[in-house]
Length: 67
Image (spheres, rainbow, N blue to C red):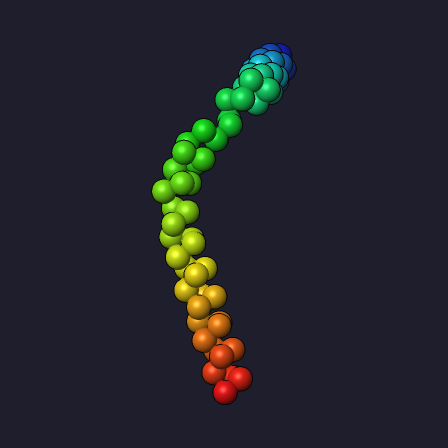
């Protein structure tokens, strides 16, 4: 029975250690996303093209409704 208490104590100490390591990593910016902003510029054109197509289609539909 004493072995169970020992294992529970050790597991709680290890869990607290991992939690402290996680909090430290978050505070130092370990999980900040540096990759996405550098790649986002490659996909901006596709977003602009699709919105231009949508607005062009909407303008054409509006123009057809007026006639």
